[in-house]
Length: 104
Ligand SMILES: [Zn+2]
Image (cartoon, protein in one colour):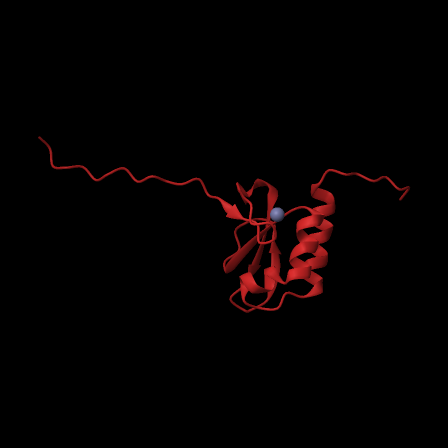
């Protein structure tokens, strides 16, 4: 009998919690917001930036909710500026697939 093998590691599928609605999702529909080591907050569209991350659905509803409740600031432990939330909103508007061709 061989020595007892190490139990196989159960790798959990990466799942993220939306800071707005607390739904757990695969990261597909979530946008990562990262607090960089500098202490600045930015969107991480690549998912590769280092720093503390928080996730929110790419939906206007959830973004507005975190703006209102300050959930993002709480999750990242720093104030999140309007610049970032504006970007999130823009992203959310794109992500929902509602394409408004309002004659640009
Ligand atoms: Zn959400």
